[in-house]
Image (cartoon, rainbow, N blue to C red; front, side, top):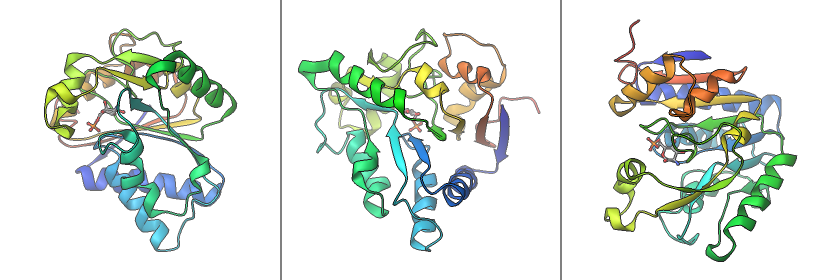
Length: 242
Ligand code: GLP
């Protein structure tokens, strides 16, 4: 696991954007695993900028998103589908047919998971972008999720719903379930970039860097992967002894 220690969120976003941009230049038909949340927004801004400056094209890029709430339709501004269009896809030349975002219909939960899992089985993700939850979740793989897990429907913990309520008008509106890529599928990516910045991530980063591997802290599975880059900043590293 390689740690890149940046000054702040802006610098972390620039570094993550540069790694992804350079990879798109080398491999124009790259397959990207994408994440939502505040962590990747700055990275997406940098990628949009690079596209606008004619440095990169997404014409042949394929994407697979990590997760989606259950119970929100795709037009809902809180859905991850909406988030991805608003923060990336609507601003670049990606072919929307190459975009994959899990979607679980209430009456076909199991089937929706199976379908996404099958798609992931065939895909070879070159770079998987990740954020990290305060409790160590990646995607929506909450503590105790087995590392062998494939796409499934998760009951969100109160901690996660609480953390994500800032995007909703009240906690009651935060869905209780989500569909998420499983840890096994995340680990299949050739390279993983995890962005963890800000004070709120300091405990999680400390625990991640303690190197203890346990399902109590899902992100610790990443120690079993050959090519992980953790991009952090001063605040997120504030509890780590240097
Ligand atoms: C959500 C997402 C995760 C994300 C996490 C952290 O729970 N499902 O993929 O990593 O939030 O979000 P943020 O980057 O906003 O701190």
